[in-house]
Image 1 (cartoon, helix red, strand yellow):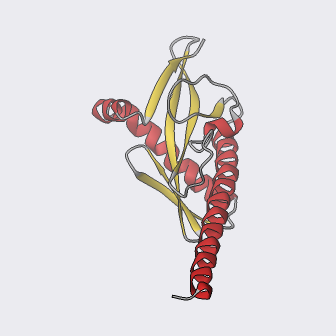
Image 2 (spheres, helix red, strand yellow):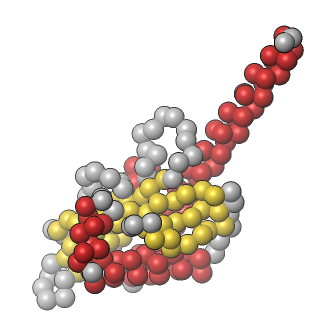
Length: 174
């Protein structure tokens, strides 16, 4: 092996890690934008009285604005291209009194070439989002999230499974 061959291999590795870093950064930016837009779209989907926040997908949370902390990549210094999770907190009012309950569901965003696959709960795919998307795509995602939320309360067994696996969480609204 010559010195030039070794340098060429090292240069090829440097190019590969550069592409990896660029892909990771792109994934984070795309998911952050999509997550923020989806949070706003879901708020609009539920109506003007709705309270919806992007919150951390795991651990303690309160209904508040978390910005980057709402995404599983927050606090990580290493770049990766693994699926990114985001918590979505929704306040659901009680019908029989003035109370309410906050529900957190976990959305997963997975980059596949030029699209982001969005799943909720137990890997229920709610949509495949192309690099460019429109309000109709956001509405379709909102519809899938809404259907998932309804299904949780219609099936106590599914609710228990989702809760056990950390894909949903509850807080009393105060």
